[in-house]
Image (cartoon, rainbow, N blue to C red):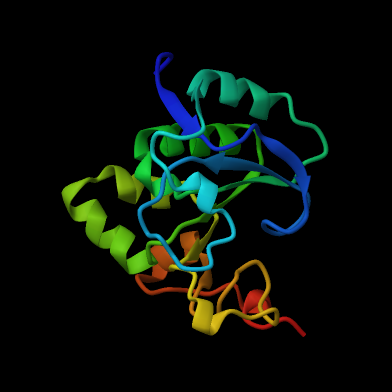
Length: 176
């Protein structure tokens, strides 16, 4: 996998406190075809935009991080680069960090995608928290944590896989 590349929208962004629980480093993937009106990061949609990086180099950056609770994968949509996403998720866990992934796909759509491409099931098996669903401007809310619209869900992926149904992270359903 030494030659595997990923297309990123920006360099790694450490010390985020808005892209998941705790102090996190965000990896911004380039490329998204969901085209959600009102998206907060439309410059990351172009699949030819951003820049290429070797996954191996990003893994080294992850190894050298200090004072981070986890890594958040956002974009764009990381699910459009499944091979790179999977390798980076594995690196996150090797370094004893937790992983959050933001995607415009729903959990159920990813499970369906895994029927044709098993890599998506392996991706889910390596995600701690999934924030799923397209941003919907009509459902935009400042009352929900770590998401932009009320249709999006903060999902405990290991618990969901174990129970065969979506398990939400309760403390993030509504901001008090």
